[in-house]
Image (cartoon, rainbow, N blue to C red; front, side, top):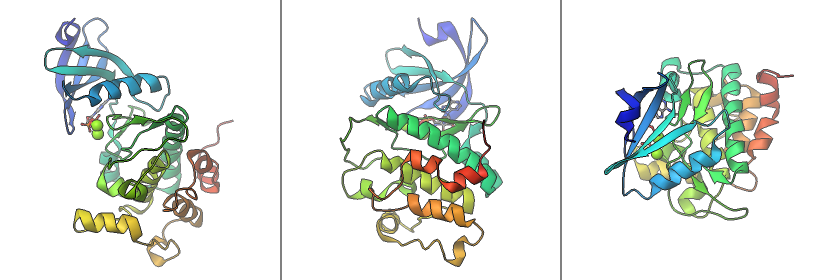
Length: 263
Ligand code: ADP
Ligand code: MG
Ligand code: MG
């Protein structure tokens, strides 16, 4: 079947580096989905599909419903996240309360922990790739840069988005902890309203990521609770071995204090 046989295509939902994402509606059930169209010949398309299938079933991962192939493209029919992107909500909101930040961050850490337990490094954690459902729950999307790695294995090669990239990605081998760093950059943006590392050029930005000391005791972070600053410091640690894991983030006192208890 061609995708046009089964779905009515609708308007654009977003545009990425390689392809576009459109709204579509099943002709059989009337249910709406998001369709990501990727040009063929991109070897990474197969990997993106394979990893999405591998991770399917977790409530924090965008579900891949079906895949179509024609002469030029692959079409990935995915669960529709009608709440849009977290980045757009952040732009509107400016800064989030500690309570709201902690609840978003907890859901993000649960899905990152799941990916890591499943042997996957996402490598592109940023609010452009975090989508929201109609009820405001987060869904991790865009597994285009994700890699499966065996226990103890590491990756090399620059990947990700400049402001979110971990220092070890810039200098050598890395693994799961690179996602934790990127999530920490996001947490900083949620709580403070600005990115922790900035630069006038790419080189200046990378230099800041590799060497700028963030002193979370200084006045700049006065508006953020002590507990949140402690967590940021433990995540934005250049020493990879000392940086905390997803599991440790989830049991950090800031998480305990500010998230809803589910008993
Ligand atoms: P790229 O790999 O090109 O960055 P993404 O998978 O990140 O592509 O998708 C690009 C954009 O399309 C997203 O930022 C978002 O705006 C939109 N989008 C992607 N998937 C969905 C979805 N399941 N539901 C709604 N919008 C989506
Ligand atoms: Mg993307
Ligand atoms: Mg991608």
